[in-house]
Length: 66
Length: 139
Image 1 (cartoon, chains in turn red, orange):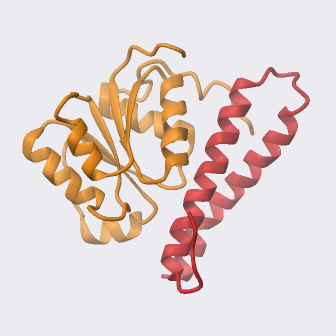
Image 2: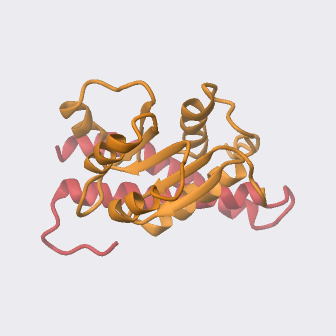
Image 3: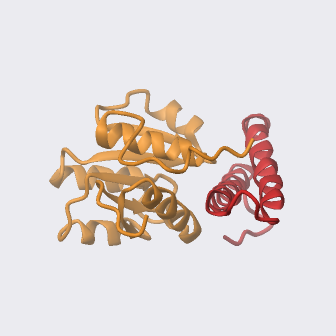
């Protein structure tokens, strides 16, 4: 998933969407597999919430670089 | 789910982490999964297997997802396809029609979104083969 200085804005958006997708998806998977009382659960929930928040601003960001 | 018995889904994406994530989400939902890292590998696999659904990344290097699906449909016209793309705006500008048996999923997507899209195409219902990811919400 490397990228150089000459990567276009739409391609950077594409890469960012892939990264967010991976963070959100795997954190959700891990949350679903952890027991409710696992001490790591709260940390994973915060990671997942941040990924969801990033996901929510992607349409606006994508529109600005269109 | 260790031994899923649901519909067979072929995932084609050049990004290994995306394939792995989709595999794990869908296996939890009861689907059987095969993976290909590109169009050529997918086309070769289809000589030996008969999936119920193809998940096609549209933004792959080399032969793009859309052209791959066109070639696959030449030999498997009834294969259902879920297109996954980070450029759905561009896609909708270029393609205003969605055929029966096709759907689009915009990246980044949620587990629930993926399961619902796959279930809708495979079974006609968003409840799918055996949902298990959506019952533990995190918000």
